[in-house]
Image (cartoon, rainbow, N blue to C red; front, top):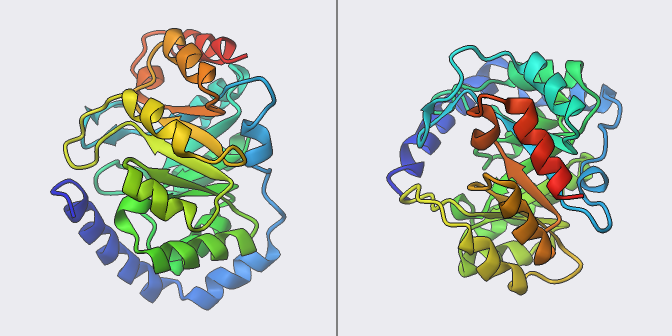
Length: 262
């Protein structure tokens, strides 16, 4: 486990233990049984002949530090929707990204777009959490999961009506991800051990993904030229956060990325 991931996962395990004590799994399951189906994620972000944009929301990150001193999820989500985002990604990790479940719930109340929960998910309890928040999809990170855990979590998510983005960074992680035949593979251009970003990661791994699996490129997408290059190798969507959130003209930046993929 990398020096970056270890403390994040330790903090997550501690919070998860308290969550299970304060809100038993059976109560979560009961909430999930009463909820309407969420907006579909895959069919929103996968559009023939286009590359779509999943716009991400996060207040801070270990690599970037504080991104938005004033963080208003509802307003940001509404702006994303107006600019043509196909979906919204919400960071819910509390200690290192300063997110929360409340952030996702606020976004769910503000827009009709499908939402993917980005967090460090390794326990079935978290899958039920994700469904209870109103998310349409969730992230599973191959780097932190065994083959058995990936299989169990992926199958449980699908059974609850959630789509799953299985994230990889290396050929070995991609091989692991392919064992569950996911509909979506996320190629993370960020090395979680060093936090270095290289867009070449997507170009190297894309040919190894079967044609019936859709690809999302994550991290390091900054310009309309980046979008055009990724579209040229049949990437279906990009997940973009910091380059939008840090832009002095957030809506103009997102609109430009969306149009470049059309």
